[in-house]
Image 1 (cartoon, rainbow, N blue to C red):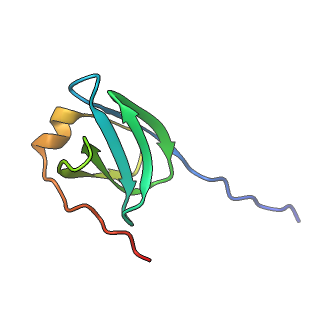
Image 2: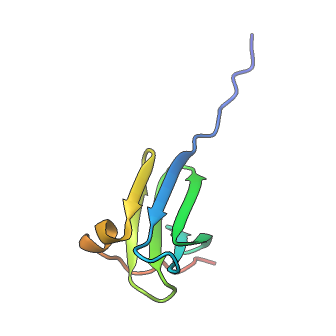
Length: 89
């Protein structure tokens, strides 16, 4: 009988800010910092719920990563924002 191995699934996420100097902060649904980019954030993540901020302390916008996604800042800002998740101890 062969061992079945479960392969981790990752999806590409690209978030592009309006300005090349804008810091893009990405957090997970539990309020933990995941990654930061400037101008463009390109990463691969496991499926799940994330939040993005364009500049620390600015409004948060939800991202439901269920497949490869590409977002522009203007697209996310046109939708609803969300509260910043508070890390659970």
